[in-house]
Length: 320
Image 1 (cartoon, one colour):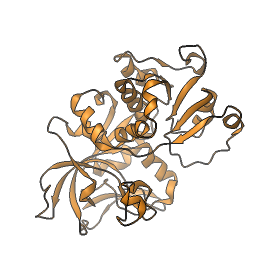
Image 2 (cartoon, one colour):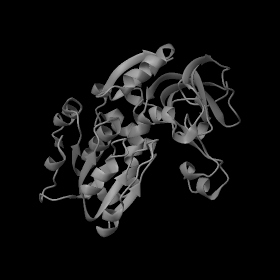
Image 3 (cartoon, helix red, strand yellow):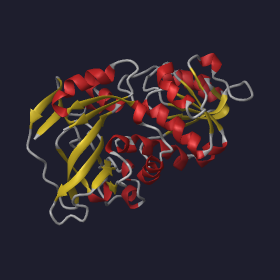
């Protein structure tokens, strides 16, 4: 099968053997995959990953023949735990010390014709959710993790920093959940999506103030850049909460004195629950169509990566 494989010298297209599912796994024919900022960071050296890239996908269960989901359209959670440790027993496979992660850590990803995942990781898609919408399920689930960790966020004023795919999804999700939320970004053309939902957005940091004209009680950092942390700290009120959603390959020298002096609570937030993400995609509460800026066949993956790196691009899709 054709696959996009990350090697020492970068990603390349290769013909490799179709994967064979292990016990309790499903073979999945990939229908559509999305290039994520994390994929671009992996290419830059994040996690030192080598193998088939990709973790955002929509697929169809293609085997084994007796699999109960055979023929169903699915999305899948990307963390695969050992199933035996205390973390897995608590349903927290994303923190299993022996986990693999789809297309990120010790597990081949979805920039290929087929992939494999444990059956317990799969979620059936409603017919109403089209493939180009469903491919946003994994990052949207990560947005719901903020509410899982910090339920009070929906009662606060929140500033999201970063107008990429994750920032736009996080802002929409918090707005739908009832939070008073605004977004600080750099690209008016991206933030135009929020205007249709009457969500405030600013392109200059000094413009982004909460209702009392001061800093924000909650800030979500989703810039995907090492510089975003310092900006996020500067916009967070004393004793406020700073939520970190970015993963970047580059190391940054951070001045943490403001975090200490202002007694800011820093909350790391990663993967999240798929069920609420699927629900809001089905109801149409989250808008994604205007976020797709490129569609490529898998055989044109190098061109797709170049497109994804361009300024102003939110989401590029790959179809095997």
